[in-house]
Structure formats: C-alpha cells, structure tokens
Image 1 (cartoon, protein in one colour):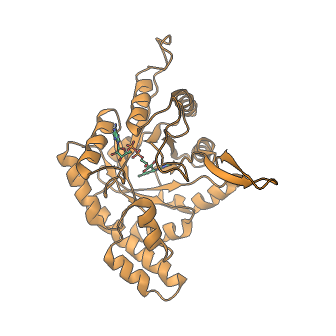
Image 2 (tube, protein in one colour):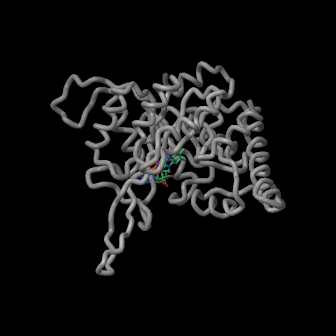
Image 3 (tube, protein in one colour):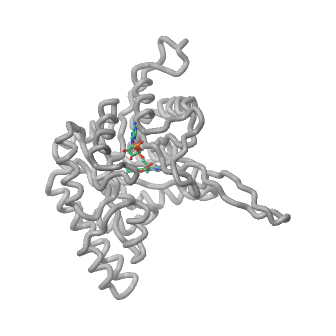
Length: 318
Ligand code: FAD
C-alpha cells in the first residue's frame, strides 16, 4: 500500500515508522531482522531503508603513493526492502538518490522496484561524496531531487527514456521527499528552500519526511510556512534521540540542526553514559508526545542501528 494511503486509513491517528541503514558490506541480513523484530510490536506500516552512494578511500601502495578507490560501503538497499516485505508483510520504502546514478540507472532501478511490488520511494539528491566540497551529479544523471521526482512521475505515466516505448507499463509509485525545518544548508534562505520544496510537490511528490530536529517549534513553524506556501501534503517529523554527549556538537555539524537548550542542559548534567542515554530518551519521548498530541500523521524514527533506545521511546509513546 502507499504511504499516503496509510495516513488516510489512520484517519487522524498517529502512526509509528522507522528508518534503517543497510549493514556495512560483509554484514549479515540477520542483523537487520534482529534490529527490526523488537520494533514490530509498534506495527509500523512502512520502514524506510537508506541508500548510500560510493565513497572514495585511499589505499597506500608499496611505492608510498596512495591509490584512490571508489567503494560502496553499505550496498543492499533494494534486497533489504524485498526481505522486509517478505518477512514482515510490511511495506518498505527504499531511498533513491541522484548521486552515482545516470538517468538510465535510475530507470532500471525503478523497474526493479516495480517488479518487486514496492509502491513507495523516497526521492532525494544525496550529499556530496566524502572529501568533495559540493554535490557532483553523475554524467547523464540528475542534479536535483526534483529531476528524480519528475522521472518517477514520468514512469507513473508510462513514459520511459526510450521514446520508442509508446505503451510502457505505468508504474504507480508514491513519491516522498525530504524537507528541512531548519532549512537545507545549501539554500540561501528558507523562502527559496520552500519554493524548491513546493516545486517537488507540484512535480508529483505526495508527502514530506523532515530532517531530524530537536526543537518541536521548528517543526511546527515549518509546517505553517509550508501551508502558507501552498504545500499541502502530509509532513512527517523525523526524530532521533541523543545517546552520546559528542552528538550535541556532531549532529549540528553534520545535519545543520540546532539543539534545544534544555536538552543540552540535561545531557550535560548526566554523570555517566547511561544517564546521557536516559536524558536523550526522555527528550525524544517529550518531543514525540507533543507531536502526537498535535496530530502529526506519523512519528518517523531514525534508528541508526540502535533499536533498544528507539524501542524504549516507542513503548513510552504508544
Ligand atoms: P534537493 O531537493 O535537490 O535540494 C538540494 C539543495 O538545492 C537545497 O538547498 C535546495 O533548496 C536546492 N534546490 C533544489 N532544487 C533546486 C533547483 N531546481 N535549482 C536550484 N536549487 C535547487 N542522503 C543519502 O545519501 N541517502 C539517504 O538515504 C538519505 N536519506 C534522507 C532522508 C531524509 C528524510 C532526509 C531529510 C535526508 C536524507 N538524505 C539522504 C540526505 C539528503 O540527500 C541531503 O540532505 C541532500 O543534501 C539534499 O537532498 P534533497 O533531496 O533535499 O535535495
């Protein structure tokens, strides 16, 4: 079923969903099941699986020179989606990115997803590769997420890259996109960021999942601004608990989100690793309950390999 159909069916009830990462190359599928099994009691209607493009690593050669090699450290997104649907009967939402894909690669990936009966896709651009200071699209690939949304929507209308195909199978993907309550870091201002977000919705996106945030006011303000800009699709809040003190600075650096002063205070007051987790969990429960009371369609948790903490939060909120 489509993500948006779950929201409609819930009729105002707040759902719970999760995002997971594929294991590092060489890892086991069983690690994904061990993580998801305890989360199934919260009846997630869908589970997102992230996509990771290749990274460059530098291997030192006997000569002393370094060889630059491109490798994908976390492959397996599509296989994991199929395995999740098979084991749990839950819809999987693969993330599809522009980076590393030509338009034809994208078309072929979408054909695979369609044949697997995957009904949902989160269409995003992807970040710059490690050690590159800006996003560089693949030659013959998409520069912005909106172009990916348009390509998916074309296939939903039976339009393929090969113009000789005049009666192509029409896919029926429900397209999600990313949204940024605290603005995407490359955008000169919030107004322009919202314009581009609206353009993605006008091009065919049916819902938005937000970047993580630690101050609900940022989410509520973002929803108000989206509505004022004419963006009327569901906006799903993305949540992540703080579990380590260093995340108070690493998350703002990597995700461009502010930490609420009260959260910073309670994490800094913690006396040991356990108390830090407790402080982060308490804060995320507080955020979740407030968002649920406000009637958000879904609480979407970024698990980042830590199912125990997420389970504690979901148990307290459901
Ligand atoms: P875009 O919508 O393309 O926007 C990128 C920037 O360009 C923004 O500043 C925007 O304002 C601007 N812009 C947009 N369109 C135009 C245009 N036509 N002309 C000029 N400027 C424009 N990354 C991964 O690699 N894998 C994942 O699985 C993944 N999952 C994510 C899930 C969520 C919920 C979120 C919030 C992010 C995720 N990311 C993931 C990170 C994401 O790829 C980055 O945040 C990326 O930098 C931007 O992606 P986007 O889709 O928002 O890009």
